Image (cartoon, rainbow, N blue to C red; front, top):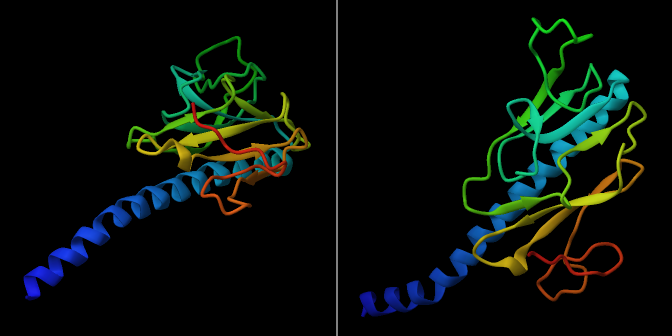
Length: 177
């Protein structure tokens, strides 16, 4: 009897547990992305420097947002990370401020086809307003986003209408590709 009751409970609980784990992973990742953006913007303002967030490959920003993400002060203003003190053409070395680990679960992160988020010393975006989109591989309807305004301010999307999908402040659903 005990085994029958336990197996019924497990049969009911396991699917819900899987959804719960995915939602927790999405919440954790989107919080990390938002903190990374906030760190970059606050650093730009407090240090009065251009600060960039991007996935780096050999010092160049790429569009591989699911890889390790770096926040750095762009001392030389070239839009790339360079800490090679032996380069005579550099005015100064860039400074690495923070790194977010690679997304390992097969989930994807995109930033509207751009290869970097750049903040100027006033904290405004140096490019167009956009959003970081986080999409879990197992359920695309659970996608969430960090929306960036041209002012540099950001917010995390949420499920405003109770349909189980996140919306931005205009009521538009977050859609994963």
